[in-house]
Image (cartoon, helix red, strand yellow):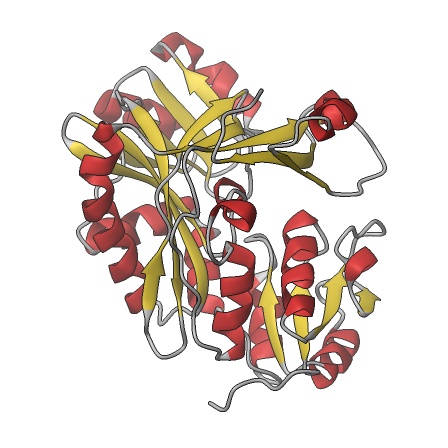
Length: 359
């Protein structure tokens, strides 16, 4: 493929903050962005040249969008697979549909990763209430019940500490098809962030250690503890195999648990990722710029860390009100996503410190 020339239009499916940061990165490389999303509010469209608000299944609007774009990508993994399949018949979509389809089905994802030699937590399929009992007999408790489809930031999940809690957990996920996962004893959670070009070149950023609060990522920090550094290479090798198997182009993220037995795979995201936001200031080339480079066929940029330590802190709900105080810290970089409504659990921005810890 020829390199995408400056002035070309990159279509982005989804209008959230990841699309917003991708659009900024694209503009810095001379590209224009066209956002396609069904939502009325689109913080990505605020910084894009073009915006289409239409349903995911509106084929005439999708066809018009494809005709206007030179390449299309997506900013979150819940874009309907049928939408991407339709667009792929009209314009290049990178990454393609394969990774999206697998990431949308937790059971398919775990089986796929296990088939490539990865080690997910012990799991069992749950189709109905009876099979939940069978899964608990096999996996044991405590365990966590997760819907097969949808759900993120702690949504679509229910903990089961004893078998007596099975009824409440089943009702808690609205009786959807699910996966039961055994609890994993781990020292740390960490991410593997990679970018793969259309020529197969693959680069990795350093792995941050992640801390979640209420199921939502709170902080990503570098350097990680030694336990994570010792397991980084094995986790990277798995993610490289996944990317190659999917013929992937763009940023791909894997979440792992560092355990006494090595890295345990948790889940993957076929997109730029919250745990990689630190790369905007903390790496030579950010995840957003390298994703644009990859889908545009450009050479990949260096993924080296600029300076240590690095701390990325999410601004969630009322936390966005701390922005003035954060801006008073000369070492702090603030990103406000421009969302109008402040509510609990909503990611509204993030702050990053590079080379110095938070004041």
